[in-house]
Structure formats: structure tokens, C-alpha cells
Length: 342
Image: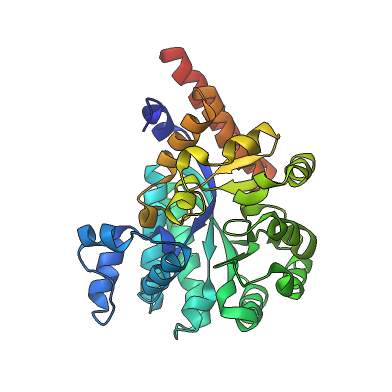
């Protein structure tokens, strides 16, 4: 971590690309694994560090799904959601759009209405106790195909929870082309949800173009390979289409070979609106504060540069204008006070 760590730790932040199950801390994963002893997931928090060492993206998905399988009851869902908010509040995350994959839970037998009630109860309790505002992105697990797309769309539109703001697409990209999901995104967009698919993480820039042109993407999850296409970077910059950049995640899943080769520099140099996010933080041995430290080093930022990155996430969020102004004001006030006193 850089010497900016104390500043970053206290900085008010928003996070836009972070997964529900993927945010389960080792303590929570171990607790859930102990509840479900038929699982292959270790019950020792220290052993989870080895379990969360990935050989490639496919291996990461296998491990991720084994943790998903620990979420079996509405009580598990509520516990996970509330504890994720607690961990965010410790990092001064004021607002987060949490990516949830309801299909993964409902197909495992959790009642869909009980699932929605559990996440909403946790959301309201977390805001009351921690002051952290949560909103939901429901995403299609791409590897599960069009059945999952249909079910996710139905759950989002027919049982739409109060906190739902966006519609996404996750999972492997290789062998899962984006255009096949167009009808589902069309329906979600028509219902007023924002389009935020993953694209260009483990495939080339054409996947990002497909997400823009076929899925109406307003933000791109990862977009790592966009740096390979100057025309795409120019398009993203001109249209102010944000990228949800997750540096340590890209290293852990081998989407980039070396953190110093991460294309975030090229993105910023091209004028793209870049936001910094943690993706699946405990699984990657990171958190949002650490990701800001990594980005600050790669981009050569000082405190005000880091604060501008934090304000990018606020701008790119789907928070209402008053909420955006409030958090941006907190960032400015905190930064001014820090610079004046250090």
C-alpha cells in the first residue's frame, strides 16, 4: 500500500462493481460452510486464502459457484447482505451498487419472494445502522444461458425490489456472446433499469462494442481490453460511458499478466471516465481501499487525484442528483481538510 493509505481509508467513496456473494468475508464464508458441512468449502478462515488462489478465470468461476452454493436459506441471504454492508461501511463506502445474481439462489430452492424480502430487509437495516446506501444490479449468469436470462428478467421485472436500479450480465465471456441477451436487456431497459453488462474482461474489444450496440450498455463492467482499440476508447470518452475498473481482480483471474501492465493508464490518458472497484474483494485478497492505492500508484496520483477518482464513481452512479451532490461534497470537504492539515 502507498503512503496515501491513511487518506484513502477515510475518504468517502462509492462503489459500482462489487458482487454480492463475492463480497462474503472469510469469516462469513467459514460460518456458512460450517452450517452446510456437505460443502467442499473450508470452514477455517485461514484455509480460505489457499482456496481462493485461482489458476485462471474458469477456476475462479468454479470456486465462486461453490461459495454461491452455501447461500441456501433467506436467513443466509440476509446475513450475507448485511455483513457486506458492514464491511463497506468500515471503508467509508457511502453508496454501493451491489451486483446480485438471484437466479443462482432461486434455482437452489430459495423462495423468490423470501429472497427479495431478505435483501431489502438487509438494505434498510444497513442504511439505518451504518449509513451506507445500497442499490441492486440484478445480473444474468451468462454461463447458465438463456434460461437464466429469462428467469433473471422475470425476477427483476415482476418482483422488482425497491432497491433495484440496474441490469447486468456476468460470468465467463468466452463462448458466451453478448448479442444473444439483447431481448432481455431490451425488456429491462424498457422497464426503466440501467444496462451495465460485463464486457471485455477476458475477451477482446469487440465484446465491449457488442455490449454497447446490442445491450445498450450505459457503463461497462471491466472493459479491460478496450485499451486495445483506440476507436473504442475515443467512443467511450466522447459518450462519457464509464468503465468499472477492478485492477486486482484482473490480475487474480489472469485477465492481465502483471499489475504494472494494467491498461488503466491508457484508459485515463484517452479521457475515459474510469471508476475503481473491488469486484469480489475477499476472494482476491483485496478491498476497495487497497484498489484505490493500486490505482493511485499506477496513475501517479496525489490526494486530490485520488479524490477525483472517487468523484468519478459518484458521477457514474445511478444515485439521484441530490445524493450525488451530497457525497461529492463530502469528498471535497474531507480532501480540503486533509490537505490543510498534512
